[in-house]
Length: 234
Image (tube, rainbow, N blue to C red; front, side, top):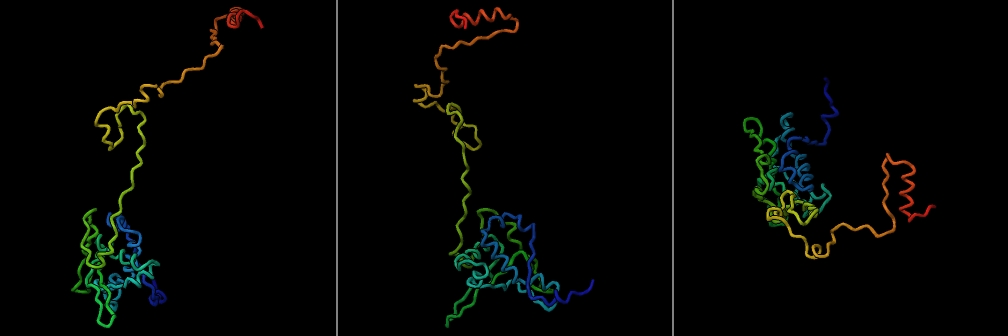
């Protein structure tokens, strides 16, 4: 296969979409803003590119993107961008290697990050990825060194839609319902006295129910009809 010179001169940087990473609980627990921010940081990490090209340095550990620039990339506010960076640190996807600093002249330096799912270094100083998201568990977040004040609150699960009891005179058999362990529920006093849940009687009318067996003859059925209508023949 020949060389693709157009592809070599291309300035765009692409990232890999790894299925195993997206199936981890640490990825599913991320907010949508944090997932988008991770892709923008991954574009600026040349760890995988350095393995293929000797002239490209592995900058993992020194990946940076200011919250203002990251907010422009994501199309969101600066507060949302900082919240995404804090959420990525809490779930172990990135680690802060250098805190941001504000200089005396007002021009500071932004924070540096390391992507934990990619290796660092080059040649003999190459270090394997630490893979903190693999060992992450719900409720056990990692330390957030940068933008800790903007860490998003833990999302609560959806409230289960518990259907009403079909019969209040019996114990609840729904899964996870503590009321079913205390025995049967007595019927409401109003329902017990007035029998509102009882069957409705049929209205009183002058009609009679007539049943004719197949063995009856036509004359016998005519006699039954005359008796039903008071002996008057139509």
